[in-house]
Length: 149
Image 1 (spheres, rainbow, N blue to C red):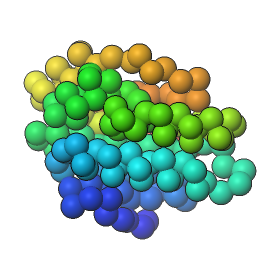
Image 2 (image 1 turned 90 degrees about the vertical axis):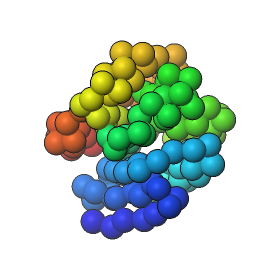
Image 3 (image 1 turned 60 degrees about the vertical axis):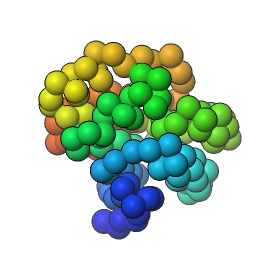
Image 4 (image 1 turned 30 degrees about the vertical axis):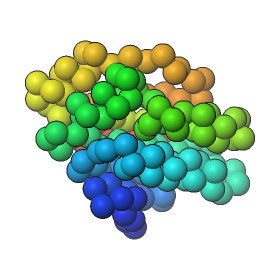
């Protein structure tokens, strides 16, 4: 497993032969979301030839993360773009890899705020290349991602 800092509050672990990217988020602000989105776009654009599946785990389970993330993203937490302004760049990256499937697991805390985020989340950016699910158990999220990638 290799790891990398995306920002001072966001770390990514490369797992399962680098086919699952686990983004661990300790805090979010607008700048961090932009940097995180840039990292996701770069990861999608730099996939080796022949890779047709990638798993992303957005770990928002730390207290105080899921609600600000949801608010910054206008309640749309089941999308690959992690900032509203980053949506176009993610869509372009996916369009440049038409055979790529992205499996996104969003990990929310098993708290009142996590339940609110789950209940209030919207899914208006449904892309045919993306399957997204919400989890409150990291093991269940990993299990699903390992099965699909």
